[in-house]
Image (cartoon, rainbow, N blue to C red; front, side, top):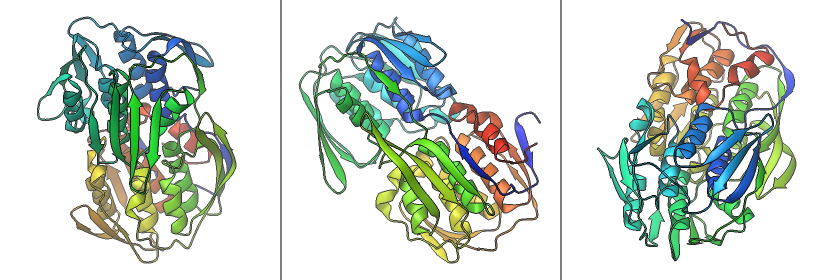
Length: 441
């Protein structure tokens, strides 16, 4: 089966330095923001994945040209409210929730009928969280059952809003910020803590955005219709991609790994904070700042004596894409690990919380679930000797990659479907695994 991998050997000890793929969140946001800048922006080290390629294609359909060079991509910005779209144009976001939700805000002033579609997985995701605030701005936006496809038409009479974003979704927050940029006046957002890449990029661009932080929420004030110029931006490595190799190293025998030039934005390192609380041997070194973002190297060593965790809920949003991996470490703990309010996991590319628990059951790890609260009963001596087949029915890239990490560290004979899913975010994943010595057929 071409779209399947087979693994029947644990990875041998390794000691390596690696780079991982470029940050997907920053790659997409740099394209979107350079599209509404004035002039030619250069984006270096842009992630070469399906989600990013779809972002370029979507922007091209609304009048933004680009040229891909060997080392950088040139984006020809059209300025705020400078998009031009033909009537009834169809924008295909593929698998990318970031692209789909953010572009709706970016297009809120386009006065043409537009249809937004996505793949099977994306079409099952919740879009009411963005259609509601966009309706308040004055965008005519409709969707069936709160998902894709969405039909919308922007407005020349957008009005600023005051809005509370209480899900901790950076995609929703960015959608509102982008719509606010298109809108005269001041928009106020009370946003539950989440990734802040959009705000940091706008601050670097000297856009008039004010942010006041408190314990649980950020108060964001955006002044609309303030033009800004083109910029150059180099994308660092992706923490979510690095996380697979962090956990691979932790669960392997006598291994060490340094992952270079990773975006260590505080809103992205929840997994490191959680794993360190579980006694994992992880250090961040060689830190620096780049245009508002923090970048550093991550050094990891194998760990044998993991401690269980009562995971602080405030870390959920900064580790939301990495809980599948955290559960693998919890399975090897001596004791019971507990996690609360993980409902957002089921709002991702697939119902990841449900899938994670099916996975734990398959490999014989005991757990208890009460709604969105989970307790995992760890076993430090966990070692598999059976046959395991992971059927990834919604082709979720993170489910595939997590399964590979489990297969390389827990032993057993594995068949893992849908390897092509990694093209959405991390096409080089299996190549790096092989460079570290992983035997994959």
